Amino acid sequence: NAGVTQTPKFQVLKTGQSMTLQCAQDMNHEYMSWYRQDPGMGLRLIHYSVGAGITDQGEVPNGYNVSRSTTEDFPLRLLSAAPSQTSVYFCASSYLGRGNEKLFFGSGTQLSVL
Amino acid sequence: QQQVKQSPQSLIVQKGGISIINCAYENTAFDYFPWYQQFPGKGPALLIAIRPDVSEKKEGRFTISFNKSAKQFSLHIMDSQPGDSATYFCAASMGTDKLIFGTGTRLQVFP
Image (cartoon, rainbow over all chains, first blue to last red; front, top):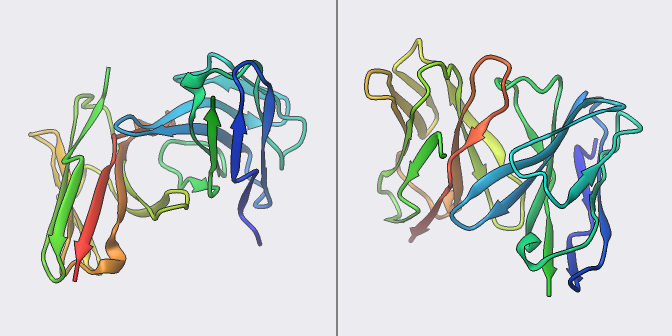
């Protein structure tokens, strides 16, 4: 039982490049989400999904795209990377996505945009 | 607009001491208050949570104290150990709405 798996663990991009951060969970959770963690800013919600085919924006969605074709996978796409997107990204899942449910986090992807 | 304010930003405690992290919230409709613990290189993990119908919840060395009238809640770590060194996030939610996280506190416990 792997939980929430994120790849890659580290990535360096040049400004303007695109890439996809991968997230997979094996707990059959309906809810999946992406957060970014920046010093002094805490965890901020980027996008989330409450099931396959359903996605919605969080607090800081600009510059990111998501899709959910399966229950297990929820990739995050950076369309044209900017230095402001340098951050640590976490994928998290829970059973239904209710605020009072336990969130399960992946181990993160550290992204640097030069 | 930050709905959950966390302090201090960093905390240094000697082994065996008490670590105290505070959070204040604005929305009186919040009804769930968890704390998440994050070790370096790892994702956050749920540590302990409380609802506003109780004033305190204890799990081992970790205690949440909740003051509804002051709209504040705090995490107390008794007999702090070097293994407790981590970043701690408070959070709050209302009903089925998404969790709102505080800005985090980096705790360092020195032997």
